[in-house]
Length: 134
Ligand code: TYD
Image (tube, rainbow, N blue to C red):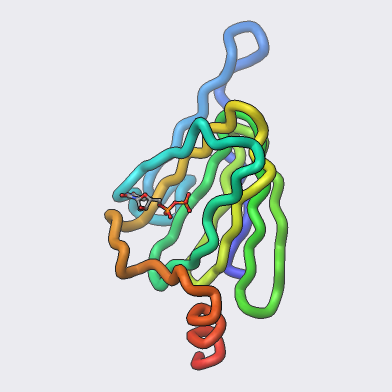
C-alpha cells in the first residue's frame, strides 16, 4: 500500500508547549511545492473521493480528528489522524475518502506538485480501470 504514517519530532515540553518542523526531503519524503488546508468542514461531510496519477501528499491533522480510508485497488487501510506530530503519506494511485471530521478539524496537506486538475482521477470506475491496466 502506497501510504503510511510518518512521526515527526516534537520540540518543547508541557511547560512551554510544542513545535514541529517539516522540511522537504528530510522528514517529508518529497520537495514541498504546495500547502493547503481544510477547515470548517461539517462533521457529517465526507471529502476526497479521488486518487492522483502522480501527486504525493502528506496529510496532518493539526487540530481535531479525522479518518482517512485509502484503497490501492486491492487493499483498504483506515487511518485515524488526531496528532499534530503525525502525518499520513499518500502516494500516487491511492483512492482516498476523508470522513468522521470532529468539530474544528484542521487538516493541513503538503503536496509534491502545484495544483493540477489533470492529475486527479475523480471517477471511481476509471480509477479501477487504470489499476487493472497496470
Ligand atoms: P479537492 O482536491 O477535490 O478537495 P477535497 O477532496 O478535500 O474535497 O479540491 C476541492 C476544490 O478546490 C476543487 O474545486 C479544486 C480546488 N483546489 C484548488 O484550487 N487548489 C488546490 O490546491 C486544491 C487542493 C484544490
